[in-house]
Image (cartoon, rainbow, N blue to C red; front, side, top):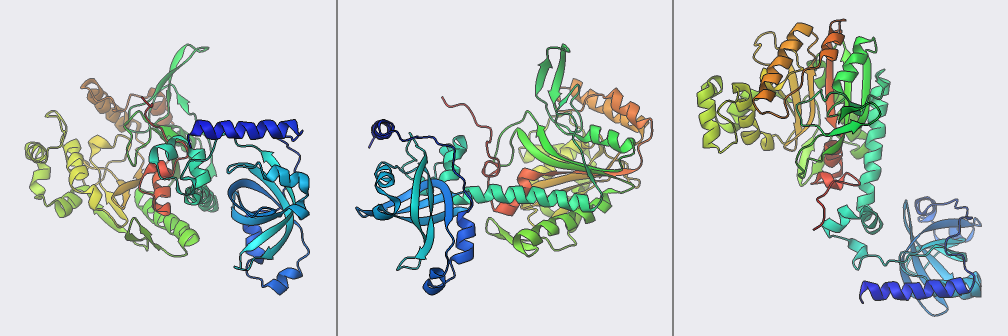
Length: 492
């Protein structure tokens, strides 16, 4: 049946209910129970034990199925915690309520009250003595509401996805749990949660292209933040030695299965710590999450077992390219040889690119997707790490790591550069890259340099992509599965 015909029939039901004086949108019910609570408490009891339960239950939710038997019916009610069956009998709920039931449709919001019993098949059921219509659904649920699989519909109309797919709701319940656990983990280590500006006069803290807006009253351009880093480090300079923030970042970049222009990160900074200290802390953090969610450091992600048992592997960028990419180390010491190899691999690298950036192009092309078990990749080139402390033994590289799991970057951390003279030189290097056409290069930030001149203590900081972390802990293949309202192209 065409949707327009279904809507017409629903409108006829609505009109008939209104003519009988039925309020289609009441807001005067009190609901004290959930499906999960009722099923959890009583589903294991036998008939004799259930007969002794005198408690009356009240539930509300969406009508998901109807089996009509004339003067009685079984219906399935779905609330935020799950589904439960209710039995409607004309003699028990009354003639008026039963007439209303006859004009219910799948998708309507209903209220039921009653006692519990088990059917002959052993299903715990609410024996309703009260039924009310709370909201009439004008539009029908999708034809395959019991298993909505059309990706376009699921992401563009998330409300239908949440109605139809219990596993989709479970992802977002687990996401909320993960964020709660992260806060608990940080607070137990004396980190203070803070908030820093979303709109900034200058985009900084990462190598990325920003979104630009304009503030009319101040008549000034502002940028949606690409990272909270420079503001959080101002707080460390001000004496707030341990801070963290969980919030949105915005980067004007492409959309893919693990990129969204608006995404959530947890970023934290710890004075008197190094990037190596943060490796240990990250291992502890991820195991803390896994023990709560899986009761084990081991779990399966997209068919592969992931083992978070410490200690995780540590390998430098160059060593990873040699081991996983099969390149000779001497290639990574010579720009022309590295560039020739990049050309051979058909990597998009300009002739003018610095050696450090060519090395990273080789790493991304040859190594990233091979890092399945948790791996700390260390010693990133100076050219791609404008805010990181130089490595003492080899100043071409920095005291930085990125964490890879299942072939994806999950976290980025480094010992912070707190030398204002060195920082100015790094910004000048970035400005040269910007003038050469790199729109993602970091801008000069005089105010931040001024902050460093007041002395920021030795500090380490880390950013963890919450969306990718949730993907890992919910077995999701795409970032769109773990963001309630992902960005999508306009429909033609």
